[in-house]
Length: 127
View 1: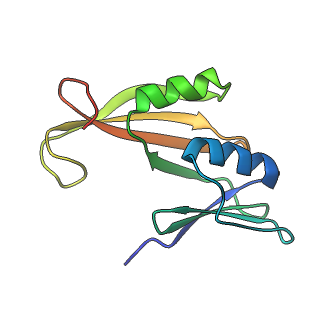
View 2: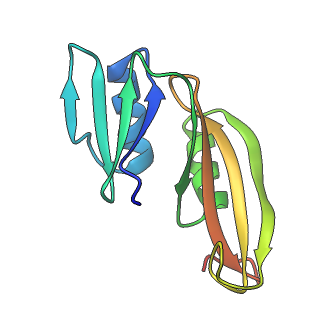
């Protein structure tokens, strides 16, 4: 089974497009307004920002959570959970073996929480 799409609530599509374009580093794949749909392509999985969708929580993989959060915070993005190690991967069942999984949480422009995840070697450098 393959994940096809994730939907998040977005009251203001223009504001959401600006936020996610800056976060992801590229423009939306499509906008349909009406009825109020904004799409980004996340390596073959659609991220849908929709007026009618409920609030959700998504997790995005970034190169280095700590530097990403510092950049976002400098731009005024609300950090709701500071970067921290949540797990060490002894094997490769849920992440790269021998790495620490770092996680932080931010609030997007529409009030949704977004988890940011990266992996680093035991020395604290990105894997």
